[in-house]
Amino acid sequence: MSALSKLSPSITDMIRFDHSHVMVTFHQYTGTTRPSVKKALAETICDAVEIHATLEEEIFYPVMRGLAGGEPVIQKSPAEHEEIKRLIANLRATDASDFRHDGLMHELMRDIMHHVADEETVLLPEAERMLSKDRLNELGAQMTRRRLELLSPKAGKVAKNTLVGFSGSTTAIVVGLASAMMAAKFISRRHA
Ligand SMILES: [Fe+2]
Ligand SMILES: [Fe+2]
Image (cartoon, rainbow, N blue to C red; front, side):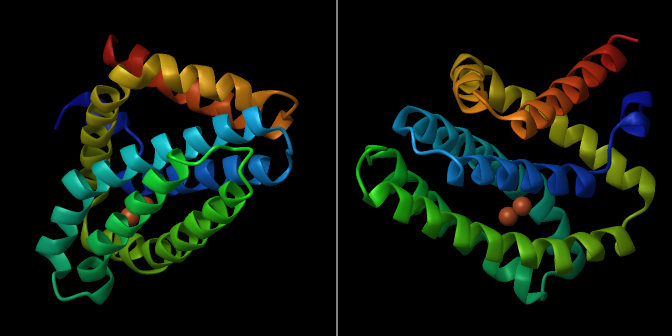
């Protein structure tokens, strides 16, 4: 096991962090009436959820299927991701000044909250019971490597939407700084 894997946050903590980031961003959405800010926040959520879903599908779910394939939550999770992706496509195709944008955003968040609750109350505790701390950290490092690959083509767009979404929001700035610090720590460890 590499030094990087040992230092990495566990995959389960990273999944929880991603969930909280989406919830905080949604909270910013409900607090604004400006269509340009709404669109930027909605795009931040859509990009973050798409990357998160891919990471779970490629790394976390296969491990969980191997450990507890009969578990109903792991069986229904990929179909729930598909439904979430369908709502993301509808939301992206809708103008933020269109009255349907809020409805679609709320529908997407209802689905996400339901899905996240199952992961946080069933899958993550199960993973932490069945896998060693080293294995959880190793999977966390694998997730970070893949995340950087998935993020790089979107880097400019993600930064721009994050900045617009940040306007006037202290919480978002704090969360954004925390993510930036996590990334910086990861990169400095990588070159240590
Ligand atoms: Fe998921
Ligand atoms: Fe998740």
